[in-house]
Length: 216
Image 1 (cartoon, helix red, strand yellow):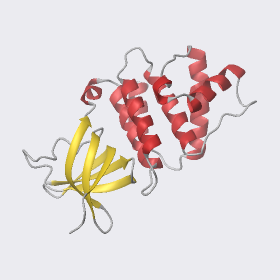
Image 2: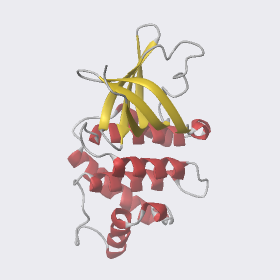
Image 3: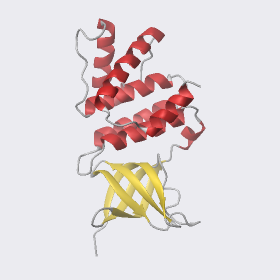
């Protein structure tokens, strides 16, 4: 009998399989991005019903198989239910999940990306923060964590260089402790768009949906 492993993570996406099951993609601290099957989780009263959804954060008990894992138990610490009522925050949140999915790899420590995802989802729930700023800070820090962005002198104004250096280096607890004036935020958006175009090799569906709501 295979041993049960416990991992900490956040559910990035789910897909119905058959009549009662789901396929989950979970970013974990211990194993990176993994595929997990939750058997019977769509049955009413099943113990995995609430845990087998995007944004769910907690400890997951899994049994390894040949190419994936099977979920046996979940201890949820955060559902992010309040995010579902935030417009367009929830769509930005789905984009965050998609971006972590894009960068995630099995067998690679996912702690840094998970911590960034957690504080960024929490930031979307704070009314005093501009969702556009939260999005751009998340994008830049995510690219930096994956070795695909570093601010260069001469490529931007001195004030923006200071902003970008703060974004990539600030402790996560202070990452969203500032706001920007409109013209400075626009410059940050242009920098992020240029870097993302260079590094992301496919269109993320969640990005299209998010931007449709942001421009509506």
